[in-house]
Length: 354
View 1 (cartoon, helix red, strand yellow):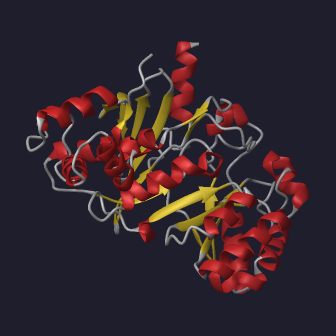
View 2 (cartoon, rainbow, N blue to C red):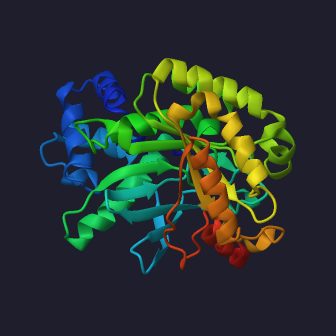
């Protein structure tokens, strides 16, 4: 049985410990790290300053590349959506987005998703497995390699962990991923340039609060009351709003960092002024550290019970929150011409196979 795994899955400390356990000098870890993340080589033989014994050990125990690019779609606005095939044949999506502040990559953490949001394309296929930390890191590396090949000296500067899956349902691998990409001797992507989105796994929010990381937290709320949230997000049965809000209070007490609340506007479902007032009331005691990201809905064929909210309804919702002292904005759409909703491209390819 092949026990080789992705070398991207090791933090620098883990790599140092592994090499020492194999009888190698500690400094070799820094050399390997430099080849992977600064020079960004794609094979072990390119690591010229390593001795043959070390190279053989790496070749026998690790892969550098495990993801295979299946499809690459580029939008008119510069957004690029990648469909990658994993070593076991499963498909995942990764998206590169261009903003005025830099290049942001949205990564996937699971094959499929069990959260069961009724409006989401990602959950159309149930969770098959968690991604390893190496498979998550390699998504960033694949995008960076693509940028390197363009010869424009561009680099990934921001990361949003908002792709397929629930990051906090794959907690340990997600945290190792963050430690790898944040390492100053590697990709050096600032913690404040990394955002992790959760559907509200309250116990994991508390664990995350104790990590002492400067990483941003976003919570997918999408409804201001339990009846409505349970109807559109089945996870609310396990983690109702009060439990989620209590965990957020704990996070704020420990970190004093602003939290983003994501709110997809569904026509005639959760976009009335009444829901906006309920949301403002819900966030009233934490409004100084809250930001509501209002998201226009991307229709998904399989979820045809929902439509995008009218512009007037979006504006009313937005103004109601502002008038209540809640900071908010409407998300700028990226890649609307290339299956923008997360999971759409993968679902279409799965249908072709099945």
